[in-house]
Image (cartoon, rainbow, N blue to C red; front, top):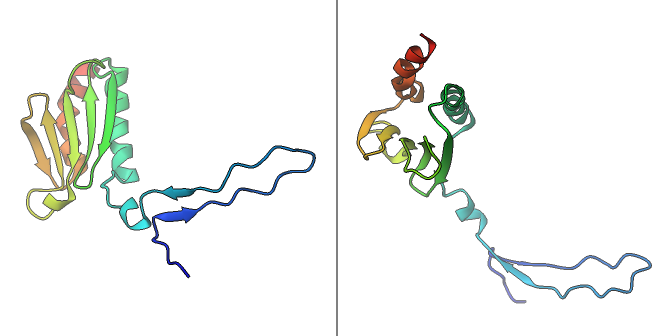
Length: 138
């Protein structure tokens, strides 16, 4: 018997339903990422994402931010904040788990690429924007 790798999954077409004379498509083999590589990317966890979106919603309501983008790679996850959709991001909130033991997993990066704040606590990192929110309320 021929052994298949975990990346190759045979597909069997369902049995034709009654009353149809249509021929079924031929079986094919799907080649995709294996289960081992599916979780090799870094993502924001639900509480982290809720904290970021809570801040984002407040800044959108005040008219300062307009758009965002989320990216995930094997080494980090990033949340980019835009003032205009066609510009480069105003800020990037990046999570890099490999730096957790040294500098902290989270960093806040400006539009010029300068690291504004870095740390292990996301809430403390997001407190950078408290000054802007206080000015908006007054």
